[in-house]
Image (cartoon, rainbow, N blue to C red; front, side, top):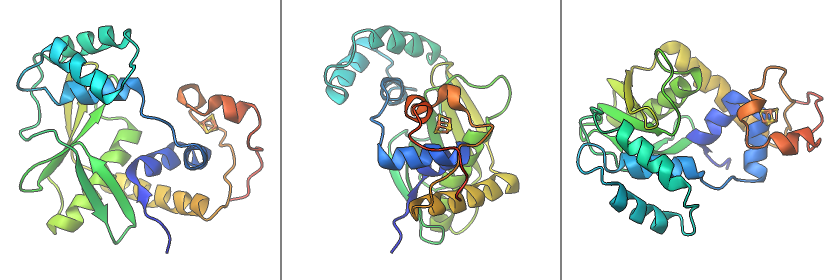
Length: 221
Ligand code: SF4
């Protein structure tokens, strides 16, 4: 039986099929930025005490670079006046049997009407980025299967800028999920992907491996 595809894997496949292939071959460790964002998010709406958050971070990431403390403190300030989603931000597994998709979402409303996704990136000037729309739609599709009807909103929580964007996934986002699922399945089957001409290489953790020719640019999908 084919293993399910994770939401993070799906988003990687949406950005660049080759990135998903690299992720499967060499799963990346959780980034310090993401760990900081998650720990700050856990305190939003109640206590945003830097000393407490830093203490927790040293438990989550033993040996964390002390330089990350400045990042955490800056994000704590950015989130002081944030109006968080009206439910707890706590990890919650989600699954779609129909799509073969699994994930761990950062918060779910008790009535399953909404969920939240924590991002360790600045909020875009307007709206929500395409990658985040795909991520939101993927989580919504999983929860909708459990709820039996569509979600009302996905809250994108951008910790570095202290911004929350409420988004309702659209049909175009669901189509993008289906396309990315098909790509990810082909990669899972061992059909190595090409290097896309418009791949977002400047922000990719596999840029060095890619540039060193770990994969040829020839399409075999
Ligand atoms: S470096 Fe570019 S082509 Fe290579 S995996 Fe990353 S995004 Fe894709």
